[in-house]
Image: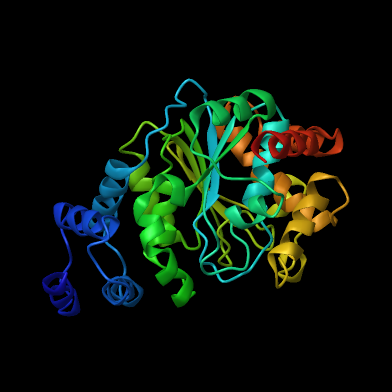
Length: 331
């Protein structure tokens, strides 16, 4: 690690094999917290390369705890985090809306490192106990359409670096890795990124896989469809900039999406969205992200129909029923 750090401090880049090797060493506990912090800091000072990101991903997938859920045509809905917006848990709420609409969701998530409430925080706040048991995960998918994979249970490196990430409390390249290392490698993915450069990098990486994906970025820096500005989306078929108004939405403000100062506050907003008592701005943002997830699964559906399906999932109570059953199964 000392040799690697000295090279990186001299502005060298790692090739894919070297990146894989150092991430394996970190995952196995061979590096101390100070070394990990120094290593992470390098990539705060310069952009990560595609070779480095690919090598890190190779290592995490190699070491992941295997769980075979490949017979479910599922989607993961995830943002990279690190946009410094401290929104409520939009992607996680969208997961239950999509599940309520009749689709399978396998969400890969973790505790918040640079925000108050990550996916694992808001899930755990509902009394859920994380599990790596395949039978429980399958039961959850069968009965409520949703399974949750807590990253630290499936990716050893995520657990090794968790204290350092929490202490740094800033965006790191692990934010970029999380969406790439869902241990089930689901067939579909809706991924939110905090800038277009990162979106293009993911677009390149996903084109080398068989994942059907949509990448979204709000042009004002949100790692999801925030409806606070126009947003861009990428897929295998191209890219497009869309305004909220063109989809029938009213623009939101940053204050509309604020997640609060505690996990408990974020969880209350999350619950209000799913039980239909949230503000229009909060609901619309979740609906928009859920709609693009549905569109990723079924490209034959128009965005208008996907939005209608997401709205119906909330209005009919199906999204809330999915959440309640999820809690029953996983508590």
